[in-house]
Image 1 (spheres, rainbow, N blue to C red):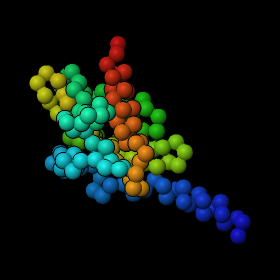
Image 2: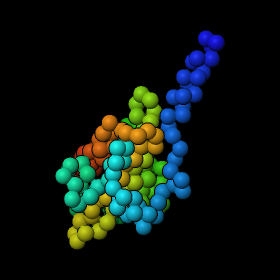
Image 3: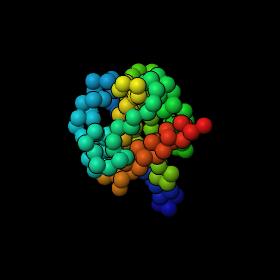
Image 4: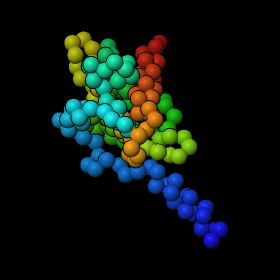
Length: 152
């Protein structure tokens, strides 16, 4: 009985990654619908009306293609982050927590707004009913990395 406990614990921890979203990365219409659904206990979404700065869309100087490239570079420089799909208009990244290896899915869309590009985002936990603020922290971490990418 004693030898099965570590295997059970390992199986439990391996299951913490959760299941990737059905269908993978959403198209632009589905992404906008997800944003319109709003956030929740384990989902953070950007909105123009958000009081929390982490949840406000980020305006970045430059055209969408250049901003997407900076987003990809910023994600590549973050620990425990990975780009899952960047082929379509919506970028899909994941962030894995350090201890329990929980996975959050982050969707990003770069939209032209005048001379700048507005980055819209959604970060959602794969498992659980609450995230203790992790998805908001995911977006804050990404915004900080994006800001550093602008620095000379």
